[in-house]
Structures are given as structure tokens and as C-alpha cells.
Image (cartoon, rainbow, N blue to C red; front, side, top):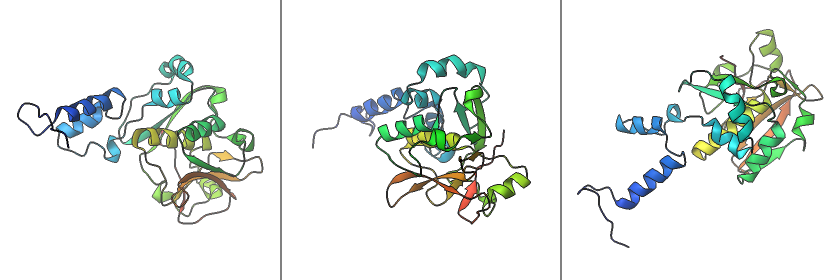
Length: 230
């Protein structure tokens, strides 16, 4: 084992500092992470995961579109919520390709999600927008056992398939981990061409992101929407 060069008589080595600054440069560590570390808090707790949408749209090969529109839809960031930035031109198929390019297995109920899920409460084809959800790994626990029909009756607006896929991409880029390890996000803001409701979850056994569907009347404790909060 090679000799470690320590810095200033501390137990911190020069290679550790080099790796620290490399992670700052590539965005693995951001200012919020660093401040939590300086405050002796867990720098990588859920509340410390910051959404870097520039990096997301770089992976989607949409950097120009992102730079052109981000100023039009800017809202104050809040570490307590997932802030989803949806730029005009992005589609479910495009996000699936980016996830596959990152080496993730994608299990889809249809090869063409763009055509297979034509109805959405919000659509970037009509212009770029931002939408916000609770910052949780698993979909909203208070919405368990609620079908898409029930959510509509209760006037609860839910996440769309595209928004959920974008959130998966950004969370994976930030942490190397996945959302919905134990439950399933019901994308109640979307409908398939047959009127069914798409869903997304992480299948640990196959180590892949799954996109499936449920009937609008389906409900169970592990099937949970993510409600729009702003």
C-alpha cells in the first residue's frame, strides 16, 4: 500500500482532497451538501439531494433547449420538495433512451411510450413548465389505496408519466439510486391510448425501472400517486 501524504498534520490525505474537489467539479457534491457537512449534518440525506436540471438535460442532449427556456419557468427552489423541470421537446421515449444509455434496464409495457400514453394533464408540447411534489423516495403514503378514479373524484392532481421518468433520471444521476423501491408510483396525471393509467417503479429482483399500467379503478396499499403540491 502506498504512503499517504497528509495535509497540514491532519488525517486528511492529498488524494482525498483531490477526489473531494473532483466531485465538486462534476456536481456529485454541491453547495448544499457541503454546508450540511460543515454543520455536522448528513450531507447526503434525502433533504440534501438537489435537483440539477442542467445535468439532466445534458444527458437528454437538450442543453440548448434547457438554456433557452429555464429562465421563463424559474421558481424558488425548496429542499423539501421535488421540483420537476419539463422543457418543451422532451418526451417519455427520450428519457427512456437516456436511462438506457446510463446502463439501466428498462421494462416497458409498450415500445413507444410517446404514442402509447397520449393523454396527460400537463404536456411540454404546449410549452415548458415546472411542477412540484413531496420529496419522498416512495410515492405519497397518504394516497395509498386510492385509485385514479378516486383521485379524480377528490380533485387530487397527480404526476404524469413523463414527470415521473424525469424524476427517476435526475435522482439516479444525483445518487446512483432509485425511487419506489417498495411501492409503485401511479401516474394518475396520464392515460394510455386504451384509457389505462401508467405506473413506474424499481424492480430490485431484475434491477430495472419498470413502466406498467393499471385500470383506473385499481387500488391497493402499494399503489400510490404523487400529488402535485404547486
